[in-house]
Image (tube, rainbow, N blue to C red; front, side, top):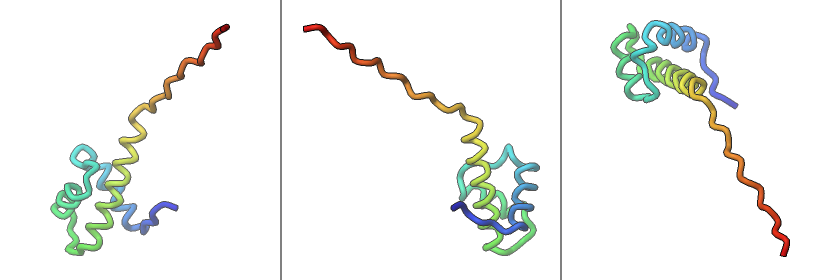
Length: 82
């Protein structure tokens, strides 16, 4: 099961991602410091929750944008006639 986030956290987090996607990263602490500067709330709990949600969404976007590597096919062993 994944994390369950409150609708308010998702709404604020998605708005932040739309507005500031270039300034956010996959690092929780840097996102937390950035969000504490732009959000009007003084609640540490809310900043941490929103930062966690934003970080997980950015990580998901990064993973989806990278092409998946196909496993290299190993050559089949040839049977020698001995």
